[in-house]
Amino acid sequence: ILLDVHLPDGNGIDYLRELIKGLNTTPVIILTARDRISHRIEGLNAGADDYLVKPFDLGELSARIRAVARRQGHFPEPQFSVGTLSIQAA
Image (cartoon, rainbow, N blue to C red; front, side, top):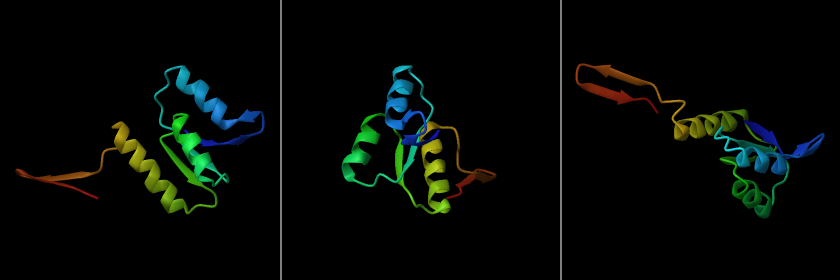
């Protein structure tokens, strides 16, 4: 889930807390203009897997999505095998 903190009908942090209470294990990356360290700590402590401040580079967002997915076991890196040799692409 890519979650903005400023939602039209509420606060994204409150939404995240409710999501976590429901035992949802879907990874969450917060995308927001809130750039204080205290905001980042609040988001991560609320259950976010990552926190990215706007404006951001789409390449960085893509890399963070892949990193979170790898940690969750949903997005393994490509692996190439020849005989007994296996190489994990990075």
